[in-house]
Amino acid sequence: MHYTFKSNATGNLIMMGAIGDSILRIIGKAPADKGIVQASDMPAAIAAIESAVALAESAPEPAAEQTTDDAPDAVTLRQRAWPFVEMMQAAHASGDAITWGV
Image 1 (cartoon, one colour):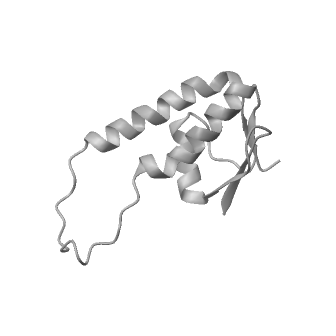
Image 2: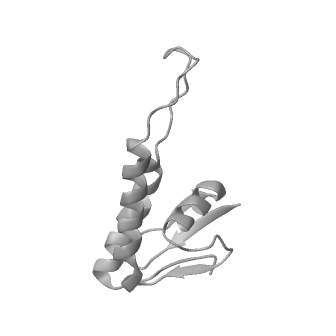
C-alpha cells in the first residue's frame, strides 16, 4: 500500500505505506485509506514532526556491526518527513487541506 497526499497548493506526494503510517501517527492521525489534514491543524502537525525528528536525532546511534563500506545508506526521519512538512507549509499558507485516498 502507499499514500498519495494531495493539496491544491502543491503537487501530489507519494509515500510508501509504512512511512506514511508513521508520519500520520506522529501528527495524531490514525493510518487509514482516506483522510484529511485541515489547514488549521497543520501548525501543530508540523511541530509534532519537528519534535519527533529532534527526538530521533538525539537518540544514540546503535552500535554498527558493519563497516562503513558495507553499511547501507540510512534514510532518516527528517529526510522522509521533510517533503510532507513542505507540503503542509504550502497548504497552510494558502489555506488548503491535504487529503489522501479521496
